[in-house]
Image (cartoon, rainbow, N blue to C red; front, top):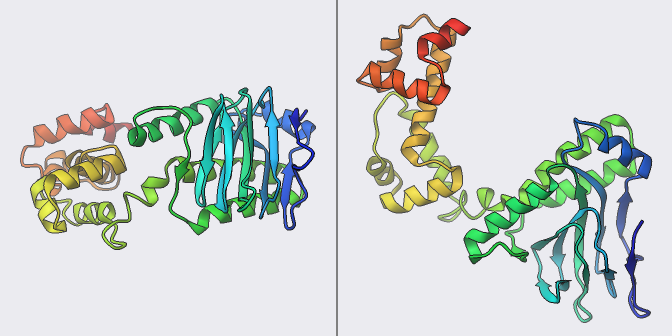
Length: 306
């Protein structure tokens, strides 16, 4: 049941070109009981273009989390007497079960894509959004986050809406809710594709570093050598790489080496000593210790398990 209210001079729906899909309750109950889908699923999704006089107020909140993505114009969201101003290419996630209101700017009304989502991991997903925002603002409160524009994000929304408008077959419901993970990740992890991975006039610094590692997988390289190849300082490359991947460059390089070692152990008859040298490890014992640390079994045990 929607417990939202409106003012006489404001409205909730009725925008030219609007799209909206609400999942029927019987379908939603089936999703809630489906262990394949009930970790994260959508309940409503839509698009309101040039949403003049758009306004919603929910004094008891909703059971779902609400992601609002403003593509054009301006609007506002209010939670706990705090107002957040929305600008083009910004998004906000309204937490579940909290009173809120939102609406379009009177002079320059917003165009928004929006989605209500719920599930066993929805709260954890919201917390991850706050934690990633915390690295930029110093707190974990709700916040408006500005995004670089990416067409694929719009494609996700339009694709999900179009599919749901065609019906609620099992395949459609499963596909839509699996794709929801990608849609939400494109917001929460937007820097992975935009701010970090595409710098220096479009050059992908992190991918260039990984490519260099892959081309020199049989060697031992240092952070200084890698930074010199990419024409950056070692400290800058380290922080950039660590934020993008979660690993230091050398740790990541060792993961690539162990990944390659697993292929050698699986598909060749090379000895462990030969594999060690092939991957740039001069000390086979160090290689074996590193392999066991990452794979939790020794190289010989890994091969025997196969």
